[in-house]
Structure formats: structure tokens, C-alpha cells
Amino acid sequence: MRKLTTLLLLLPPMLVATGHLLADSKGDDHDRAYQARQEERILSLEEILGKLDLGPDIRLLEVEHEEEDGRDIYEIEYLTNDGDIYELEVDAATGQVLKQERE
Image (cartoon, rainbow, N blue to C red):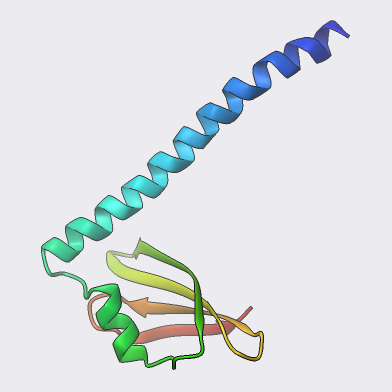
């Protein structure tokens, strides 16, 4: 019983610490994207979406900015009218689709 009580007492601070670490990593991702945009190394998300012309009936689910092998990438996940979910990897500098897969 003592171990369970100790675990229950330690769990909330551990969750808070984990949340801060995750928030910081997401913050770094946002900061890198912001810096790259300010330096005009990447296109804005609005420009990327305009180039992709996904249509008016899609719903964006998630957009991430990542760096892979020195290249800025947008990962864009969206839902179609038909209920299909797709994920695109897009070169953030050019808008070129590098990979498309149905989830």
C-alpha cells in the first residue's frame, strides 16, 4: 500500500515535467519554423497550401515543420470529404510534394 501511495504522490509531478518537455520540443519546432520563415528559407503555410490546391472541402488535421537531412519539411495531415486521411511531406522551400500516403 505504501508503494502505491508513493507512486500516486509522484505521478502528478512526473506528468507535469513530461508535459513541459513535450511543450518545449514543440516550442522549438515552432521557433525553428518561425526563424526559417523570417530568413525566407521556407514558404509560408498559406503559400504551401495555395500551391497544393487541395480543394475547399478538406479539413487540416495537423501541420508540423521538421528538418530532415538539412531540408525543411512540412508534414501536412488532412481529412477529405470522403473521410479519408492523407499525410503529405512537402519541401517547405519549394512546395514540392515529396511523399503522399493515405493513413
